[in-house]
Length: 243
Ligand SMILES: [Zn+2]
Image 1 (cartoon, helix red, strand yellow):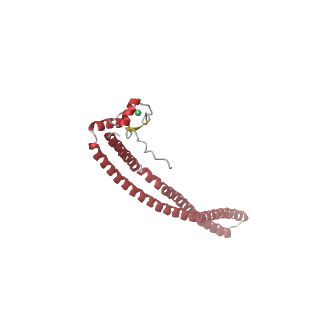
Image 2: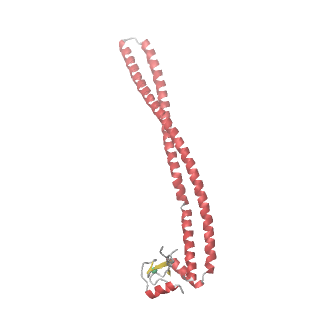
Image 3: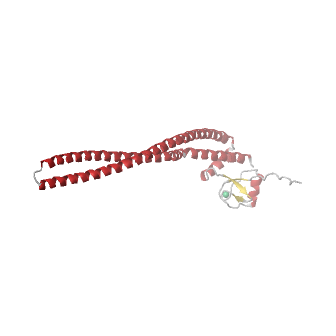
């Protein structure tokens, strides 16, 4: 391979590694959201349970107040019953008492239903709190790992950028200009392999004369079709078959 082309191939390789690291670093926010998603979900489940419990407790307190009010009315009617003077009044007050008693019965049934529901919700809320704590712990570990990884990527990227900056001035200026021009069209893919007489960059065959120039490696040859800088991979040295 032409020495400048070898350097450009190396440059392209460094640029590819740097781009991959940049993409990883850019994806950190997304990965953080993915790590935090189960925590958010567990928090929402717990919040929903907590608000249901609060709602039921409010209903229960309202029910207790209604029961107390009904009991007061019942006491009042029972006192009235002592003071009635005729059967018509007696029946009217009895009717009121029956109505309040029915209300009380219905209220008490509601309270029992609420108490059962609250008994059922309490362990569920306890489970939800435990799940949330577990997920927070797991996410904490993952986030710390992610932070370490990102820090490592930043350091690797800084080293790669340093290598790129060091390599560029050592490349022949004309070859580097050709590379940069071609890399504008094909970022990180300006240098392409020639397989047989096929440019891997554009999948178009180049003329045999040009292909043999690439193989000789005496100068930099660009694909006639896509302008990529072409190189050939030397076949591995033949291994003698076992005797
Ligand atoms: Zn091509």
